[in-house]
Length: 633
Image (cartoon, rainbow, N blue to C red):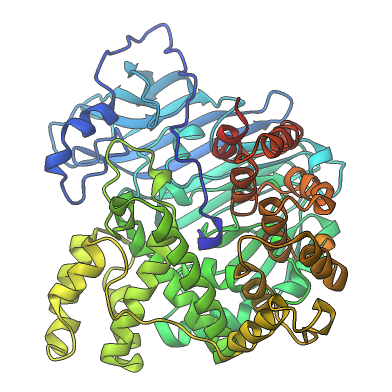
């Protein structure tokens, strides 16, 4: 997931629990989060505290899905067959994760078997325990999803670009796959999968699997994912989609109304792919395509293998926000191929991917752009460290008893990348690139822990460069809060010039109209706005807006920064645009800070509540839960 995408609710998600079928009994086991809270002093590396499943006894290896999308009732209905291995030969129970699923029946070898749906945990959902016949190597589960499934959004035609057809998309990270498939929802369990998806005849289904751009639009679609993936990378979308190639191995799916704009914006994707292969090793996933989702998508992007899901808010017309594409592509190495084993280890996905993102952008667009993006990332990290409790500033964070979505901050992304940048600077870029290439090869298609990585680092770089690297320093980066003293600090000559012009304007030495912005990039605009003092006068705000028409900016990132200033300074001429912005965009990174800022005053909170109620029907469930606390009385 792109680091610009991560902002989620810290409050637990609450869901209604499906009732078991008539042939089941419900256990009264203690919720997993309560168990984990009691075990605070005994956290075990590699233990997934966010899954009920039992892969140490019975491990699912393959899924076979057959689902029908019912847009009228907002339900996915059908079956999943789970192939499994008995890690413990005498194991007689398979436990999988569910959330708000209506389990109709479970069969093995063609016969019904007993199953039990356990007590609901507010963060984790409910365990489904299945009695396994001795001869069984697979079970089939008949089920129906909830209309309010946390990992599925159903959009009406009015909420799409074309306004004529409905749309569906899933979002499984971190633990939302269990809301649309009963499975072992842990990143340490990797599965291959096949799927058959039934849709209305005029819609196209696509998945994080093999997609045929020329498939007939007939409402019956089949998919195969031959590489083993963790559950959070299983993804489905259905809509009025068309395809346009961007290169030999890259292309874009989108609604027809934005297809050409998306293909033009992201036309450098093939070059990104080739450059990344040259530096970090072969691409392992056949094709790399993009799916442009409606504006309600709650994130910037999601690295679903073979088909990254992308927000339309990064189509700026000037390629200024395409680092998001570089990020999702980089996940094909760091995250999808080598995966965090638990959500404590998320930094192994996002820190490595953020580091690779900067490197890809530098290779493609040059050092100046790399420096600007690195400075903005560092400032964002500093802001998070100032706001977060110390325990949440640790790369290998303790999340027991909490919603795993809590881990998504700039810590795993930017702090992780900064740590890797220090390693690069100490051993040399060429040597570090060689290390990363071998790392991706060594752990290909595995899910690893922080401890596994630390041991690998000790056996490789620490042995190779004992005079340059220090184990204690590395442990400080990974296991201690904050940024270690002496860490690399990015700098940008371009931003120094922005600073001087901003200072001259703030001092009254020149009006806004005389600030030389004609050649400014989006990054310079963001730096200019994000580093304004918290308090500006009405005259200063009017001067900026009159000179640059910031209230009506078509760049969603620039508009966000300006609207934050407008909220903080109660600049009312921008509030009609603020209302429209909140209603039309569902990306959490853009709307959550605005809701939070508005909630600080009674007038702002009333404004936010009105906008939220209007926007709520079109928001993703994650966006609703992330922001509803800001508008509650």
